[in-house]
Length: 588
Image: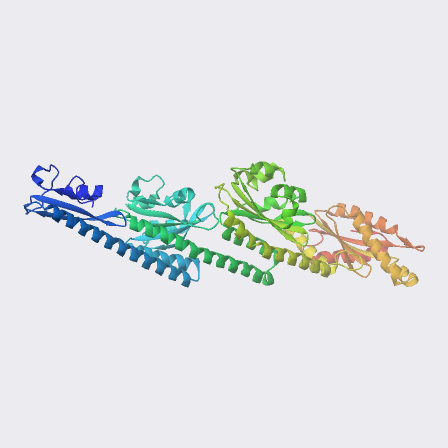
């Protein structure tokens, strides 16, 4: 009705929503005469569709209308309004039925969203639509329809930053928003304003158990137009239907993601799965935008994956069992039941709690604990101990997590428990394969792996690396005279001496038979000689029924004695035989 002046008879009838009868237009100061037509009286009858005036039946003639004519025409207008409302209701039912059918057929969230947008945009005669989904600090386009401009396509690709756009207003308030004056909106998207778009509807799509709707439906067009009640009601009903359909597909997508993790567990290295599990959890737990995975190793928790944080800075930090329970804040029993909990910065001092678990300077920098607005912590229990804690964070919204987040997080408890149990089992098997069963020291295979790793580090960072090859003196006599049982005992005592006397960082190995080896990282030749002499003296103190042991040790140092494993091993082995021939303990 924007082309009809509001002050005219027709404009007033439409604006006021009531019939207006002017018996003599000559006495009506706001009368607007039709071009080329003379009239004495005018009757303007608004027509309604579900309570909203949508049109005006305007009648003019050269003589007044009789009272019974006015009454009859008013009844006619009422009958037309009822029919318009009935047709609008039938249209709404048809659209909702088509929407429900499309959602039932859809296999993915994206397919469902695209079908819903196409149906609603076309049915309402609009130009375009987008279904936005909140993912941490941005809204990402789940699907769009009718968007062609390059600047708008970039917006869809990049997403809406926190607080930008009508979709964020709807997320924050939970209320639908309709406008035909988009340029006046303070939260409007600059690209849309630049193109002169005027008319938009933004509605929350209900998310079960969520404190706020996780998705927002936005429809619009360039030209200005009203939003009649019938369309508003239709869109509200469509969002409820859409919400139910998307919830089903969301749960399905979550199941599929978890199933893929189980399949990956059979194919990928365990260390590669930690970040993968975390990424999937952040993607599928509503409200999450960052996170970390702490795994129990050697009685403490260590960061094994991080998203949005400095993993390298966190890897050097250990969290004791009590410190982690303090962070969890719900008690050991609940942790052993795997109950997730939520912290909100609006209710709890998250940074203060974090500072009690580790050094504040580390938590503030690598852990960004002062930026965390909401945290969801999921313990991963297995057979009476908590194997890990999965932390999911939002750095912008204190109300990011709700019951839907807790329910989604529980999906990851089973695959994580399986992953960590498998990790422990596989680690035990690997350790068994790399451990000498008699002495408990790492074996020759473990030595080859470790020596190659240490040599690569020494090359990369330019520090010295020394190697000792050790052969026992007097062992054959012990074995031959006192028997293999005493010989085995002798080898175990040598291993105990090597473990007891080793400096921090030294890595002793049993090569096989009566030969041992020690790797000295960050150690030049002088330091390796001193350490080797200490080992030799300790071994000389081992006696069995009067038969005492000794050692001949050959040393080689990177880089002066060689730069490859073969060169260094050959040098150390040669010097060990020379030490034996010369009757000395250590030869470098």
